[in-house]
Length: 262
Image (tube, one colour):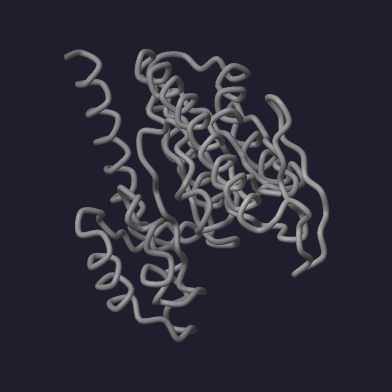
């Protein structure tokens, strides 16, 4: 169960001391604490969880910046093509800098094995019923990776356009990956994620002749939601316009290095 977003509504979260546990409840079943008391406790638990996450995220950010590591949090719906984009990026830019990857999935190490085949250090995080990565998970992964200065760390979050918008990981930037296999109104339906993004990648554009997707409409809505985030139309499988993505990565590295020298 996600501590904040409530996925897994059949459970109710309680706090005892410094830990949490959940009790199952049938949908609509009243709680013995009384509705008002339960609501107050839920708000308090949510505030505690988010405050703890933000503290760890601030620690992560300082740790990463101190080592001149660019950490990018890649978020998307399931199946948008994040892993394929990472594979192509890691192979094309292997010689430019050190790389590291944090793979977030509910189950399996399938994506981590794909990344490991690119000869890049990778840590797999299986979140179970939790629908997002959090700052503590990333902190643990950073300790295991122990990446050298100048690394670009790519964090592939769990496929979900809701909860990852709430959880700061200490990353340098969020990158939203959407695909033309989804609806072209995604930025309107999931505005908080798109508002949090520094870049929007529209992937699988090689499929545009075969799907009812209006790329211009998608880009227009994305810019209405977040005027500051560029939208790049790419195909990770065919390689279309990946140079624009690679140039953006180089700019982030340069900005990070300049900040470190200041």
